[in-house]
Image (cartoon, rainbow, N blue to C red):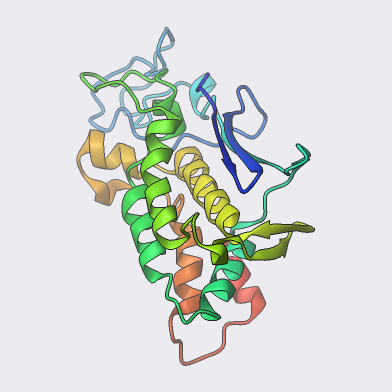
Length: 242
């Protein structure tokens, strides 16, 4: 199990936990046997053998991630609620910034550089996959803490404007909380669905990455704020968050 991460923001609480085991585990997209030179399943302790040309390096029993990060949100009264969708959070952040003539391009750009390819996939993070001569995995706190500085830079906890509330998921949520939830969701998305970290750090060829992971929500922000020559209707915008 991966130790959970908890943060309290404006009397609300968010928690990122490892839902293990679960029925929502995603297929592991990594190519542990990319050199096609090994017949041993790369899941630690597994004795199954695989075809030499099976690039995944995983047997059928371990083809899916066995862990799954998920984010929970608790109100100031301690009630558990469903987190807002990426799209709704981004729309609220854009609305908040537009009334202040303030660009959030830097916020989303810094998140992209610090999250995409920098968060291990969930199987690697669990340290249940055999990675030869690779240092211990970071904790969720190691991953989240640097991102808090980015949030604080654009949504200062000392500024009253960071506490403007928006109605999301049938709850009034301060914008600083939405920023934290969004970052938490990106971490979960990148770890549960992404392979960029593995390609960048293990294969040493980022062009081999095949999954968008957290890039999809970030692409929605780019599509919403780019000055297109046409109008994007709600259906088109919604597809960017699928």
